[in-house]
Image (cartoon, rainbow over all chains, first blue to last red; front, side, top):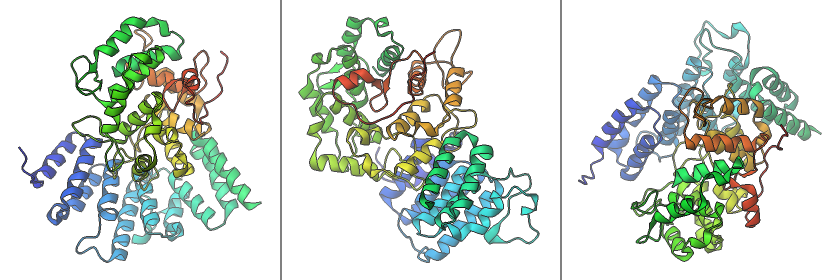
Length: 210
Length: 290
């Protein structure tokens, strides 16, 4: 029976996702529904929905992917025209979640995504990233700084994704030798499974210096 | 049909093609012909589908019986599934997916009919794939979908130039977990079949050296069922033909001794693809002697 009434489908999809939170086709269907009907009432609850999924499992890559779609790739809806505010909101959101669970590739990819799609330099988040690339204990602070939320106690530091991010910042800023030091630490200690990849980055980096 | 393709290919790579009786295999393939649609279904009496049609072509090619196919009809079926957006549907019911795009392109290529997808048709096919690229550098199965492993279609179409190879290579090598296995997306479990899906893409991009080959080899081998035989998705699980093929395929690309070379673009014996003049650039690890 064709009802062409998408509202109940969102509820149906949410229920299906309870059982299988990362089901590729279910998320794809949700996305299709939102894009096809493009109804503001359908969109209205979507950010809350994605929030809840990320709270439920901060490592759910499908949820992070969906959030990127909702925020940055589905047009600008009423109340969202102040893009700077949206960007600040999303940066705070992703930093909060990295603070909660530092070794989460989905969140780090999302952080890159925000900066890439808005043409912002990676150096904008350098202070934040440094806290996670730093193995020392005194990365925790007393005063809460929303721009630079520190890692939660017990986080495994340095976080390889942060080290990689910091190396990319160094590279983009022309600080190749600092970048190669970090790539070396990844190759030899913190991300040895990708040793050959990090050695590739070192070679390419040094080539650009010559 | 797909299972026969998985089994036969695995046997070919292990050098024991004769294990499956040639005539019976061909008969089975032909019994899946859907004369209404002009293509192959997954089983007798099943509706034709792009995926099973590709598998049929692959099997008949390996059994040197491609002449049994009514090529014009099959080509008509494949091209009829090409959508205005550039992607392919899997069958007349309309599900679209870049994996079907791959099936179509591969099937046409194996039949020597890829030239029929030219000019505007080829461009919109390639453009569809480009639009599937996501913010993390990976590609999804439809525009907007989450990144998931595989891009051999572009290799067949000789349009790899549209890819940012380094970013994609990075996203692919990030699939390797500390235990050596590969996953299909961030924060998901390792699975032997990604030893092929991810590895073949890396072979095409000539970036297999970025993978820790020893650890991946060990992981695949540890997923074997040493009593009943076969390879499972991960250690301790039940073996099946699907994971057996992709485990063996992965091992072949990693240079495991005693195996035949596998063409990662077509997932078929490399010598067969070479003979048909279809070899595209790719690089596997050198085959080790025992």
